[in-house]
Length: 296
View 1 (tube, rainbow, N blue to C red):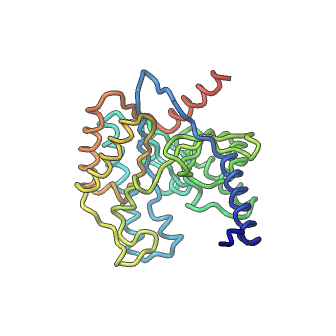
View 2 (spheres, helix red, strand yellow; view 1 turned 45 degrees about the vertical axis):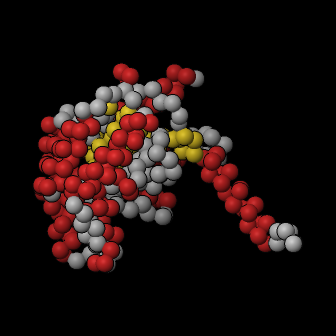
View 3 (cartoon, rainbow, N blue to C red; view 1 turned 180 degrees about the vertical axis):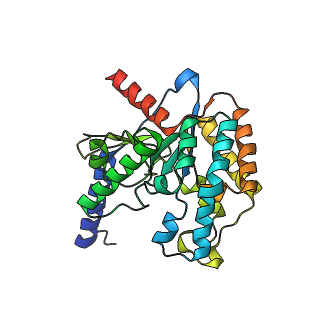
């Protein structure tokens, strides 16, 4: 039997290995993180405050725009109240344009101690470098003007170099691992911390009808009790293993009353276990960065 690898396939394998090596050089998982006060698990509650901006970018009909608007008028306030009632410090990832549309909700969140972070200018990152810079700088200025403080984190694919130039210390976008990791240049220089999340713990995956343009046959309108159990099992596994968990919500999705009630039950179950820390993403990032500096 001829086991010779054809030249073309051999080149493909070599290219894949080179790509994997490059990816591995740029992504470094952080093992054995020690959390404050002996906590075994850090849980970030994050909210992507998109309202209708993403819907506009996708040219969706008025009914979808109105669904997004609910998040700005009602949903975000319910989430702030929920987090405050549990003394959880959440991170609100907001597009810069939201500062023009719903500034009072962002100010209320900031007054409660929640982090206001970057989620692009209008829910997209331009491909043109100068326009990308313009969008990022407008978002920074808008958030600082609204809540009195520049963002230090983002949920976006803005270029790492540009983020570092503007004082960002973390991103929460890449899901290459369930643990926090460093994203760097191929030689390991200029790293930025990534706090990963995944669609399996994203409310839009379960509750958003016609999610990302899907047709009616692919609609996702699941029973909140079922989602509660799925997320609880995920939390239990994370708690047993120790480490990190990032839960992604959207005010126009989780801000509905029955889902707020589900989240309230879920948080109570989480709090019943020992050693769970509920910080903002910035708190997690500064803790990891501080430990890294201390080890050097």
